[in-house]
Image (cartoon, rainbow, N blue to C red; front, top):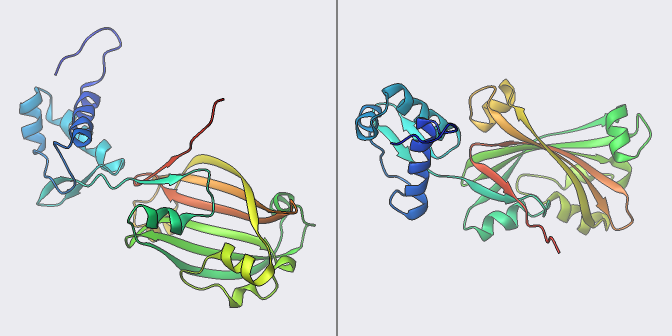
Length: 243
């Protein structure tokens, strides 16, 4: 591997890019085994430490899987999710030939604290219902999502929500509430112990925190949602029309 100019690319990044290029071109595909750290070091004239670091970075990004006693294998299991269409998780995944599933973790009623009341434009102490759900794709957990709704908009809704139920479909069918737009905010966060256990990742793993307020046709704030998504296997994208 060559290094050039003052701002030369670090060796580990050159090797990482080479592996990513091989995946992109089809030379490497899911399930293929990579050479060992020693073999990579010999092959590219780098240290074993650099080879190990490269594989660690690729593992963290969900490109490879390291199996004890077996070696390192290409998984490249990135799932692309549209940042814009906030209510199409199931449709989005089915369209990609993947099997989506939603597991209802808990349902609770609480009174809106100041920050939530502000987001939902309701008085402090207003009754809200909270659904906590786990999103899975092909039986791999990808996100934990909590939805907060003013209970006065949807009394009794807890009787209609179960595993694999579409919350938005229930709102439309049972309460005549159609959600038409959302304001979304995204940032990086780190999973705590409970979240890591549910998502089957190491504690303090980097995740995507997505917070959204969804509005109905009348412009009312109907839902505030907060989701923690695995950054190792999910990649968000959006399309922008610049003109």
